[in-house]
Figure 1: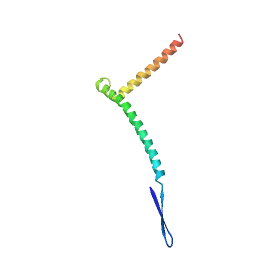
Figure 2: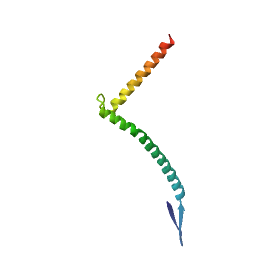
Figure 3: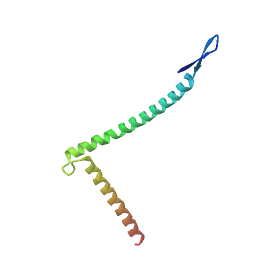
Figure 4: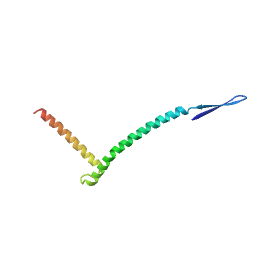
Length: 97
């Protein structure tokens, strides 16, 4: 970006050009690099979850018990919770026997 200013006196006109390109360009380059890193991180996350999504979609299509992905996830959460409770109850029971 170039800023031009014109100064007029009684007999002459003088034009001064100020260059701010370096500062603006460095700032934009840094922001662009930051955004590219963020984009790469998001693409990596998307690629890592794509296989899981395809798997869950296949399970939802073939399983008779589950018709939607959220049903599979809810069942998984229930099983994990039950396992944690069972493990803690077993640990307490062993402590007192």
